[in-house]
Image (cartoon, rainbow, N blue to C red; front, side, top):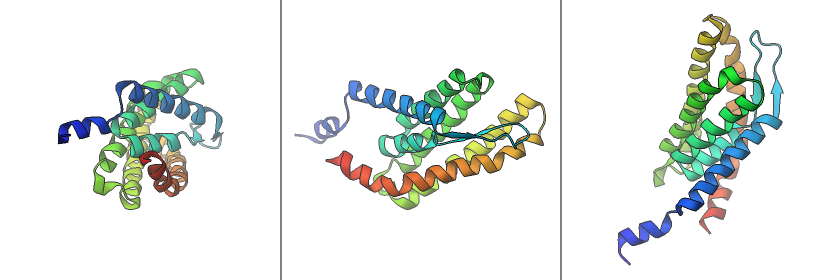
Length: 177
């Protein structure tokens, strides 16, 4: 078998990719909706959730496309279904970008390490902080109030990193079998 045939046989079928994408959209939306803590102490409300866990797994294990789709549609759908409708377009872009960039950083074979995964999650955290700062500034018409959300965003991504990074090697081994 030539190299092209070998490479094609390694890729999941379109049906498999679609199923994986749909599964991660559903898991991301579900986990965001049901494993969260509302932060009423912040001046603008807020929510710390574990939706970033399946998002990072999707992006690091299955790549930038699945990461972007899981983030954009999974968390965007959560916003639409849970009363955070005004946030949905911002979430779609911000979290979709988080998933995409995480997948881009970790897609090379030599980037499938703890160090690169940690770096990718760190970059995603920066995207989240900047993206939601801008979104809140637009929504609230105030560029000071969004600073209150920064600690919650850091906790949210940091907690996801603590949960995701240790299980990545096991997930990779299981999926390579």
